[in-house]
Length: 444
Ligand SMILES: Nc1nc2c(ncn2[C@@H]2O[C@H](COP(=O)(O)OP(=O)(O)O)[C@@H](O)[C@H]2O)c(=O)[nH]1
Ligand SMILES: [Mg+2]
Image 1 (cartoon, helix red, strand yellow):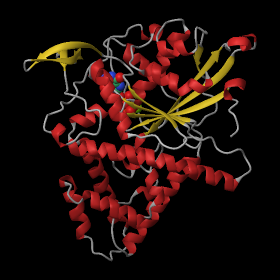
Image 2 (cartoon, protein in one colour; image 1 turned 120 degrees about the horizontal axis):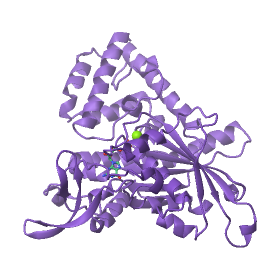
Image 3 (tube, rainbow, N blue to C red; image 1 turned 30 degrees about the vertical axis):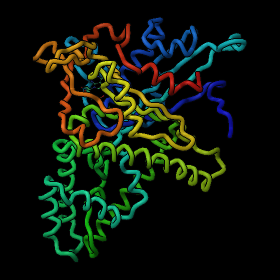
């Protein structure tokens, strides 16, 4: 293996930050930048990282946008929301943006006489929905349709779409309006499965999280069994879709990531019940399974196409259960263990698991509940003021039937802590410093 020169000569580390919508990607990147910038100004915002670099003074600045075609992560606007009066969560974001930071770190030990090491960190906010498209690359339209339609069989929300499908004659011709009507029905079904049934394993991912720009006409397809003109049209469109996914994989958006942060809101999945939780589990397994497979695919293509050095391969992955400030410290070990049980790490990948709160909004508090003392958290909820919350016992492995006989309560919508000085002093966090230290350990 060629040793990495990144640490010595300076260079760029490209980190994908992925997770489904609402997993916490925007908040994570905002807090990460605010805390690194405050650390650079001399404040002890990221203790684990400070300990790792052993007293050396890290300088951090936001990079200029340069010539990249990827939209820039709007750090200023997101931090303005958090630091505002009243504090608010950053606005919802669309697909893909990049946060770039320039780091400079004096060298340790005898190398201290040399100029500081310079490093550019590029964080790519990458929709988790798109990772769920990777398994499609291994399936033709018929196989994919079969799998989807089987998943929908016992789904009450799917009635209308299935009735529409059943009403189309088996040899129907490739009619444009039929394809569009089926697509619209299937797409709104996906939205309802996400918002009402709280499901996560929903494909194609770009139906829920469209790529930027105008929508190509071939997007109008839906899963369907059988042969004939309509099936042919849908097959062609499915093939165009998977071609686009494949192109993305080799584009700068995805093809050049060194490392990855996978965020998942497991606490909300627990509160959504056994079916939704199993679905989140399946989605995480599909995304990480597809990732493993993607390495060899990218490698194979690049070695076939050229004599260039092999494409960088993702070798470091941090899996984090987000919003961990919704449970007390005593429960966070379980939350981390649960994440670990759902996302086993294999092969050559160096991985680690975290129970993360990018913006800590609560403090721990004991609470008398039904005659026993539980470890709860205290935070401020809009219109309700300060309150205590205890969602239930977090399991340390995928829950069994006994677990589901007790209710796991929905998380209250805590307001962000008031952070008027966030720009100067950073943002309170849990394990964000540990996660960052793990990600960058080999280049510090
Ligand atoms: N309490 C708490 N809530 C969080 C945290 N991170 C995210 N959230 C909540 O989750 C929502 C979605 O986060 P966001 O970063 O926009 O998710 P994205 O869609 O993955 O970018 C936010 O608006 C917050 O309500 C956290 O660290 N603590
Ligand atoms: Mg976002």
